[in-house]
Amino acid sequence: MQPAPLVTYIRVSTSGQSRSGLGINAQRHTLAQFAKTEGFEIAREFVEVEKGLGCTGPPPSAQGCSGCRSENSDAMSRSPSSTA
Image (tube, one colour):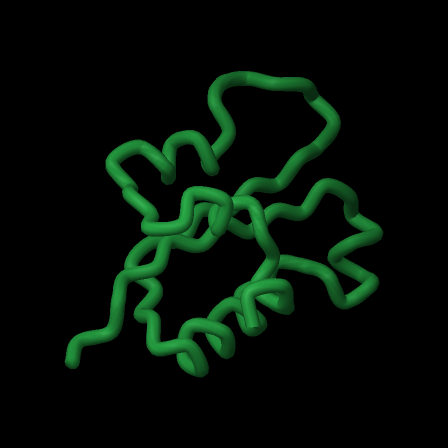
């Protein structure tokens, strides 16, 4: 059986997050482990780096959700650890 596609969203809002182990690479690794464990294949990844400049358009999460469908609509708002 083919793995189900998964769209991931990675966000870092401060430079401190990157240094604290919560940066983009750490989040990417966690999401890859989650996908592997749960039988998903990462089909697309959105990365947002907030620099305190305010909104300049729709966030990547809004762009990523267009065309997506979910059997459990609130799954989009949960962290990988809360779905285990």
